[in-house]
Length: 135
Image (tube, helix red, strand yellow):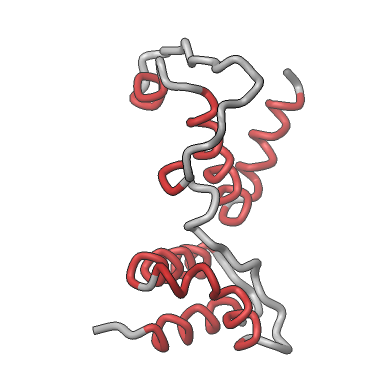
C-alpha cells in the first residue's frame, strides 16, 4: 500500500525537476489527487510541509486540488447578484451538460480547468485567453 511518505517523496521529486515537461505535470497532478483522496486531513495542511521538503530547488507551484473545486465547496450565502442560468447548447457533450445549470456553479470548474491548462499546455491557454480578450 502506498504511504503518505511515499507520496510526499514523489511530489518533492516532481517539484524538484529541473526541466519539467507535460509528463512531470501529469504525474504531479496524479500524486496530489491520490494524496488528497487518501489523506484529506493532511492535504489541507500540506503546502508548508511539501515546500519545506524541496527547499533550495526551484519548484512548481503547490496545488491543493481540494480548495476551489465546486464539488468541495461549502454552500455559499445567497449573493446580491441574480442567479444566471446557462442557456447554451451547441450539441456537444459539454454544452448539453452545462445547459440549464447555474453559472456560479460552473465557473469555478472552468476556472480550475483553465489553471490546469495553463500549467500543462501554455500555448493552448494563451490561445484561449486571446480569444476571450478579443470578445
